[in-house]
Length: 179
Ligand code: IMP
Ligand code: MG
Image (cartoon, rainbow, N blue to C red; front, side, top):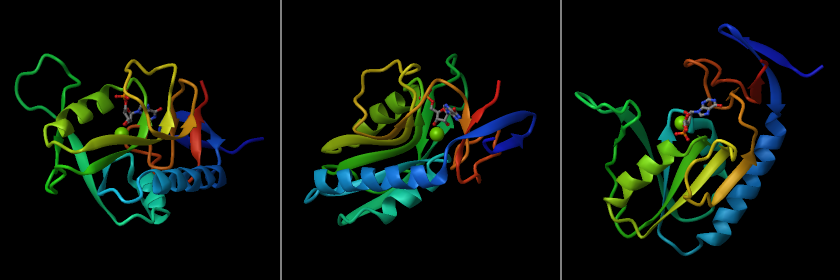
């Protein structure tokens, strides 16, 4: 029987073991290293979910590059749309650089779309996207995803940085909800 865990009121079972995650991340890093060699690269991790992925990925990056982290905050005041999010924490100059967005998971793609629109305002040379997980059946956008470790079904998952109501981020494997 596969490993199960309870987080708050829900049960989850292992769907991607830690070893598989690490192997895929190494492959992804090799791809990034060879594609972006010689470019002026800055990685931008989107908090909170990316922290484990960004850390493990960055250990295998051998480019001369920078990394920084940004967060999405809800707009204060009157906004009818509940999912308009402002990107906060931009201190580095990204103008003319190759930006690699590091995301934990791309679901509908709304978050990614909003991040890219905001980053474009800072005039980077190009924007690449690296995500640990991607749900193709939920994706509503056409933005190409340059680097992706796993395509997964449209089920709720936790672990390896991803949370259910703030919990479960510390699990080293990725778990899928048991309906
Ligand atoms: P999107 O804007 O629909 O692409 O959603 C992206 C964000 O939703 C991610 O950065 C996660 O924070 C969250 N998310 C989407 N799917 C899951 C999931 O299965 N587990 C935990 N968080 C998720
Ligand atoms: Mg996230």
